[in-house]
Length: 332
Image (cartoon, rainbow, N blue to C red):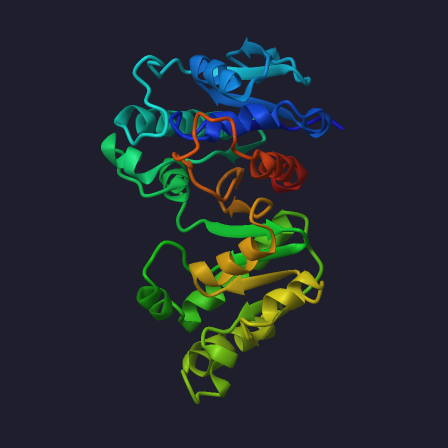
């Protein structure tokens, strides 16, 4: 089977992205399942290799087919957009935000043109983006904007547990207001279709409760009675294999045990806490609904340790492996 090409935008060059990329690409097992291609800056990769104490051949390419995909060789599309003498490691700066945005934009162009089969993204910094005048608050918003995609889905995968999110970067008060029958029904349908696109055709989706014990039939909170239960019932009538609401204090455990193929979390932290407590480093974010598959580490730029070579590459490696795992099904 032909190995998929996984594009890896380098992220903020002042953060740990370059270090976790070069550490990941020292692992032969990645090359067994995919062709990892960095989109970034050659000087930044050279610097990251130095930080980590590694030696590798840097192979600059303009097209993926020019790459030599084997351990010890880092293939890179070099945008040459960082003045390495002015780059301040571990600092918020416009140059870092601008470079990170340009890496993403180039990766999107390559994915839209079919040059890469999926992308696995590295950390960016919201303040650096702002300093560069980039009017997006995060990766998902950038990708949605560049591809003209409305409201792409976010799914976390860790071990055998998959978690979708009804809302992301909004206040908790606003997140509660977004728990409506119409939104839930839309998400149940789209999440189920997303699972099929990933090749997950069997199993039952569970919708988490919003209130403690799912509100105990309206004793303390009526969102479940007014919105969640009606949405689930209507989805069931439409043929979707979904149940809920299931109390958030048990639904994630049940999913981990294999009772559910996925959970629809009703707000950001509800699902983040469950997945990251289980295994912080191996919790991988997948963006579904874009014209291409995107996976990502689920941690930040870690400016406090950038440049030390201490950052763990586990999450980056898992993101690349997951992109390889799902990209062929996603692109059918």
